[in-house]
Image (cartoon, rainbow, N blue to C red; front, side, top):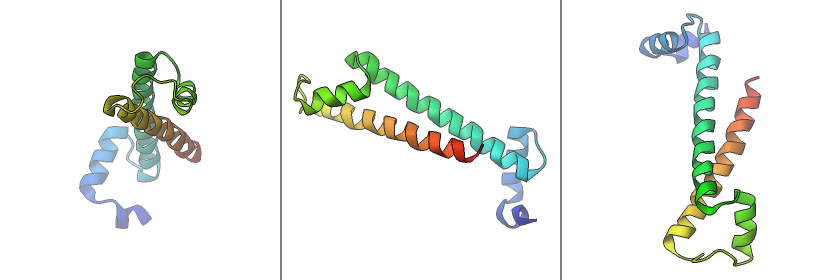
Length: 103
């Protein structure tokens, strides 16, 4: 079996315990789906924090940013928020695409 050459016994035990599934070909996709779900939730929570802070979704913030309508646009905090927010949006897109591959 391919998994015997790739998954060590300790990893197999953890995977099996986490998923309650003894077959690695079933357990591994289950664990990956759960990890993707958790990462997607993290990304959405990060985005929600910025949406609450600035009172608009990222796309609207980006348009306002590019139109130089954001107060203190070049301050460290606002610029840092922009880049972190954009990363969260990108992460959500990337993670959603990965999740679709596991369906």
